[in-house]
Amino acid sequence: MQSLPRNLWFEPTNTCNAKCPLCPTGSGPLSRSPACLDIGFYKRVIDEVQPRTVHFWNYGEPFLHPHIFEMFRYAADCGAVTYASTNGFVFYKLDPALRAILAVSQPGQLWMPQRLGPFVVIVR
Image 1 (cartoon, rainbow, N blue to C red):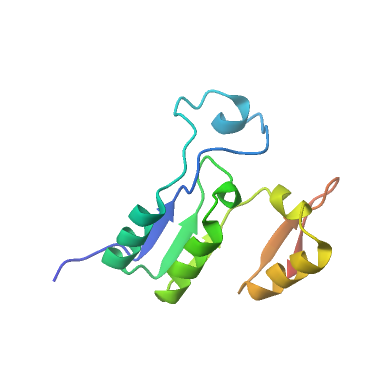
Image 2 (tube, rainbow, N blue to C red):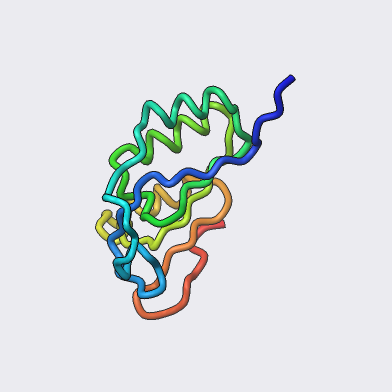
């Protein structure tokens, strides 16, 4: 029997909508061309590994990937718990009612940055 990893980390995209000075994406020295993870490749890896957890983060903002919600759903349908690291800026463009639905539909906690203050837990 082959042993496969139970936790997977994916970088859905290496693009970002923030200019954080400590991040190679935001400050500019990331030498890779902007790209998005191929959804077909992602699904093949999930199918083969059958992970318990899927993490979306690295040097890009995961919610800029055009199929990120499909990626969350696919992992969940395969029995995996999903996590993402986000700057939260994409959520500011959503209608407040839609933000509330998104927040309560996710298990665990969803952290949203305040514009001029620390991060706050908006849902437990």
